Image 1 (tube, rainbow, N blue to C red):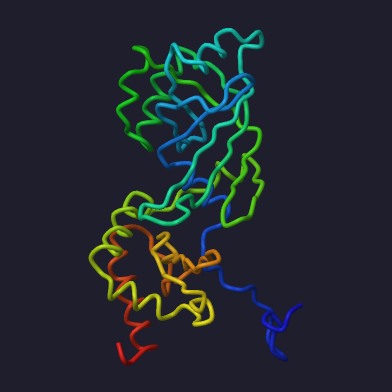
Image 2: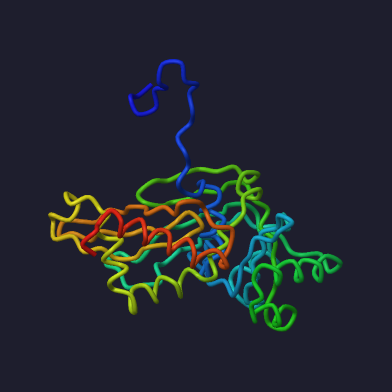
Length: 266
């Protein structure tokens, strides 16, 4: 037991308070990003028109009917295709290294039964109402990925997840507003960004470090310090996690007020 987690005499032990999403929650959030590719035997990164993990636990992909993936599934002797769906998460602001994370969803691509197609399409649209759904049956094909393995790559760490943990997790409630919020902070509020940067340990800035907005979720902001010899990331947590976009403005205000109190000259 380390000193930081040792309970005081007579005090019950308490787990450190979590200040960020679990790997399963991050995987669900990253997997919801646009831009994915399918890899399989003889297929190296074929484009995906759309993809989604539905609320009822289906991983669905929409691909061109005449493309490599749909053709391979149709011609498979087993009726399915061992494949990997790769989803990449890019930062919504300009960074030296823009990829924030990747999720690998491995399993078997299986054709949808005609009787299940309408229900699956509606479930898909509930979480990702994309135009590609209108083309299913008219140049596009929907396939189901029966999950066998989930891997999250983020911040130099690779985490293996069970399909059950992945499907039980929920994506971050700020995922849809994150890009706009970070771009707005970056372009229109340099003073607020500098205020957040003032909370970064000074030693991290000695390498000519420049602080950039990296991420936003219900737990708070993530900042990236880009130095001459590399970069490192730091989290600026909210006082309490938010439940959705309606709580975001108040949470940011409290965070900024705390930062001003810590730096009275600002």
